[in-house]
Length: 220
Image (cartoon, rainbow, N blue to C red; front, side):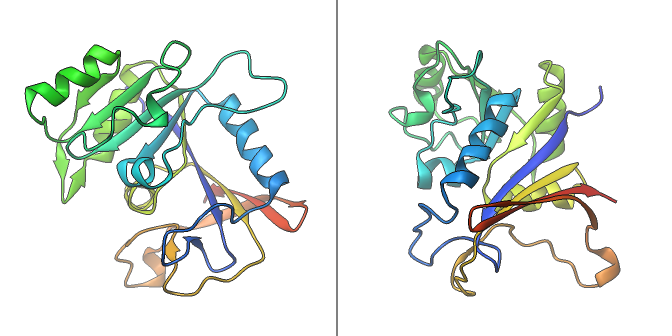
């Protein structure tokens, strides 16, 4: 089965940072840029994040638009050991938006049962290196009927998707601030040693949103 198309959303400083060294990230971009992200989310079939983003930001991943969307996107997290709080914002609104947890290891039966009793789907995928096999995650999403995915972080998940050549489009919201090398990068390690091996992109749109820029890229 063909994998879903993948759209990666990044909201960063000019030097590609998503948070300060202390983890502060609200808000790097301005109100207009954040409103566009909500519209992207409202149009998405499913929104995917990594466990680190779920723990650090405690997002609901529900679209907040006016008027509210006719339907909310489904939500998914790639997590190593279901190391998420059942009280997190992500698990609110399960009646309007399902949640899928992709776990590379099944934890104790009690923790597994807690999420399933809440109505959360837990799907096991193979390990690849020190994380989940992202190709397996995308394959399972395809099997579940999702034709497209919006990825909203974090850096490790973005890097694994880029390394697997699985990102079809990047939506990059860039704020006019600089956070320096101690800030948290939008993309984790790619182990690119030669320029010829770097993933290449073609910019297809550039828009101003107040002080911020919104750039769209498609894979070359």
